[in-house]
Each structure stands twice: as structure tokens, then as C-alpha cells.
Amino acid sequence: MEQRRNILKGLIGGAALWSATGASAWAQAPFRSARIVVETRGEGPDLILIPGLASTSAVWSRTAARMARSRRLHMVSVRGFGELSAGANAEGAVMGGLAGELRRYIAESGLTAPAVIGHSMGGQVALRLAADAPGRVGRLMTVDASPFFPALISPGATVGDVEPIAQVAYQAVQFLGDQGLRDRGRALGLELGGAADAVFGSMGWQGGDRRVLAQALYEVMTVDLRYRLPDITAPVTVVYGWSRDETSPRGRVDRLFRGAYASLPRPAVFERIEGAEHMVMIDQPARFLAAVDRFMG
Image (cartoon, rainbow, N blue to C red; front, side, top):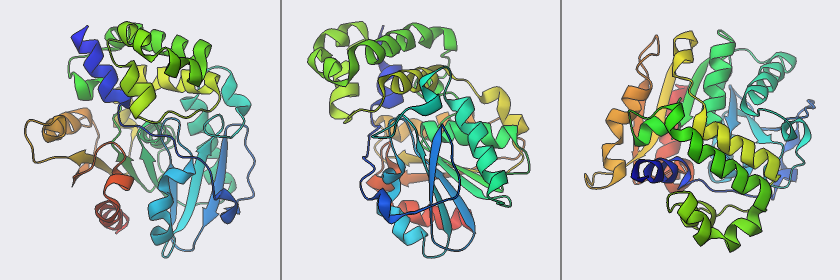
């Protein structure tokens, strides 16, 4: 039970939902999809930004203005997160379909080896995109993301270990919805190893289509992409929050992230951002931007 509690807290304890307020300021790209919405801004080398679980493109708002000065940004939002209708994400698996639509977006928009940055769940989507389409992604950055999230909390964890927790979390989101989760947070805490208050309270879970949220959460907890890493030919940069305090969980993540990406054919570049938690680009925007500048070269 203790291992399950720690896995669930670490998986999504710091994630946050940002609304799509202000999206009208972005120019709509000539692309239509039942799974994603892509907005563009700026001029320069192409950079695709993929948000994490229950986030929209607004999660990048504090840093996008700076990046758009010298780059052409492609801001992705997932249908079913925030105020966007669920579309095709309402049925079946989510992340594989997102990666497929991003491949189509790159092809139909005529992008040549764009850089891709993905946060949290978006990092997993980016890894799948790079593995499925070698040569189509120029370079890849994951932000506080792992090919198998439970291994960051318990290195020996398996999909089988996490599956029971993931099933409970799926059912809770699917059948109770956001308000029900808040109302029953304490009771759910017993079922989820005591983590429900942290997940649905302090992390700021604010909505979206419950079918999409439930399925995406389930996949974040159970998808293991470590076996796909050898298919990735693009250079990879791994960014994550870090602390000098050795008693903090963030003080011990170096080894865990390096182990998670060990099977890449080309060794990754690791960028730890001191003072950041899960929302690296919000917690430490200046340091994150410096890491992006190094990543883009």
C-alpha cells in the first residue's frame, strides 16, 4: 500500500490544469483534427509544444511570448482537456491517437524536422511521436516526463503493480466527475492509498471531459515506453525539477531520470532545474527558457 501511495502521489501530485483563456490571441493554423487543436505564433525555427495531463496550451503562456520572438511556435491542446470538446478522444485509447495526429500535422503543415517539447503526459506523446516517425522530429525535449512514470517513484515498479491503482483512479474520474471527487476526496483517499486529497484538491484539477481525463490518467499511470526508446533517432534533452536538499524527493531524481532514458541509442542531455517541481516552465521560467535556448542551439 505504501508503494502504491508513493507512486500515485509522485505521478500526478504536481500537475495543474490551466484554462485556455486568451487562446483567441493566437493565429489558428490551417489544420483540423478530432483529437487536437494547434495554434501558431512567431517566426523562426519550428517548435511544437505539447501540454501534460489536463492542461491546455495556456500552460506555456508565461514563456511563449519570449520564445515566439525567435521561433515559430505550434501550441497543441488536447481535445477533452479544459473547455475543448472531447471529439475522437472520447472513445478508446488517447495517447497513440495524439501522436498520430501530430505526425499528420507535421506532414500537412510541411514542417521539416521540427523541435518538439512535451511536458509530463505530453512528454510521453512526444517520445511516441519520435519513435513512430524517425527522421520527422529534429530534436526532442521532455519536461518532467518519463517513458514509464512509476519507475521515477519506485524503480522496480511494473505495470502490474500500478494497474490496480490505475483502475480505481479511472473509475473515480469516469463515474464521479470533478465535483464528486472533491466531495468524496477523503473517502477516495482510503481507496487510493491516501492520495486523493493531493490529486484532486491541491493539484488544482478543474475539469474537462471526464471520459478523456479518466483514460488519459490511466494511460499516464500504465504506459511503458522504455522499449520504444531504441527507435528514437533524434537527440533528446531531459528537463526536470531538482533540489539541493537531499531529504527532498527532488534531491534524488538524477539517478532515476538517467536510468529511465538509459536505452536511448544516443545518450540524452540532462538538464536539472533547481527550485522547480513538476511545472518546471512555471516554477522557474527563466531557467527553463535558458534550457530551451541551449536545446534549440
